[in-house]
Length: 519
Image 1 (cartoon, helix red, strand yellow):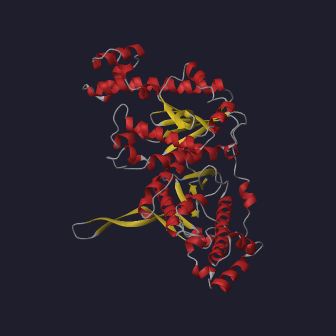
Image 2: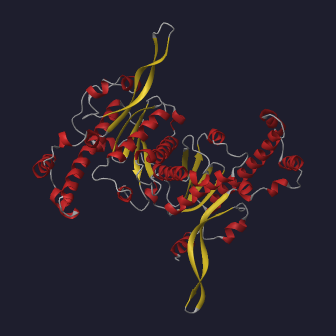
Image 3: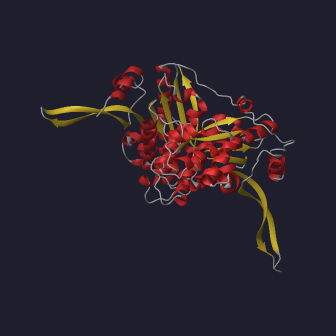
């Protein structure tokens, strides 16, 4: 199984050019930026045992899983969202050490897809295709930027290269700029980078007589090769042979259309509301390690809410979000054409952006706590055909919020009163809402204690676009001007009152009117 990870920049730009321009990456290749991508690939292989090999260049990376992998039971959306989330969180964290002289100015995000390679021949053809794209793109970009740096405009440089063949470009580089493409351009730029696992012997201790005790362990390494799809390269790597299989013959020609036939694109049903639900992965452990307050940590919830606000500001097709604990549901408008309604791209882009925002903004909400290991999230997309069913879905999530929060509040008060966790679970088993409320009153000594808890804990967080009116002075006196803003509210979305007070949220025409509002 091959998970093809491609970098996605801001929603209104189709490529990563804006990100590289804002951060002043060197053209045509920025060594530090590529090293950062490679470090992220290494981190993925170290984190996920079933990922055996990766190949990356520029702003993309492909991860190859063991053929027999049962990673999250081979569910495509879970595989791609977890990989892209972890990759993005790693990118943000490692930026500081690899590019310390530059601030990360906004949250990066990546798009991903899963490709199932039916045989070793398909996998071999896939790798040959990606490395061929690396070579073609890098050779063109090298020529383009040499011409631009020599004084030509971009349009003039593109006109010079139009229709040129591989040999033409090599001659241009050598004759005009004294560059031998194969000798003078670094391997990482020309060939891309492979990341794989190998076995090494480590000395773990010494015996009393001074003899070393050695044990074999797996180590992640990076290598470069002119042809990663060749028998010689592949079959020399014992780990690849063992976990993936062997290449039986060399391929001489790329067949991109053949490979693309294996790329199943699941497009979400037209004229339906899309809900992308994002859930924290292993967040029970994450909250324990980072000592989140039990049963609710207001700062942690505020951070989740800040990430949701950022998602609505970045993806304008998201009209509403509802969050509780470590989950968030994002509702995309019914006529959304975001990424042509391709499920994998929508899910991975939103999960990736949410993850990078969470990691980037951690210090704002936890200035006294160091992030001890990376957060990551999984995601899925579901379509709902009507406003009423969307409201039912959101009501279900808020009911779940109440049930879980009431139970957790009781559980932690019991634990704090001296009971063990297992005793607290046994005590609460089979209790109903009224019984839990009476227990809370008894443990706290406060009547109607549950209703005194902050609304954010009891009701979750609703995030949506709204209009804010400000009074400003002009020549004719005070006047009101409105602007659109994203707001976070903690309110009852089960009852009809909320939706009657905010009809624009699920009404396409009214929502567009709110979006057109300006300062």
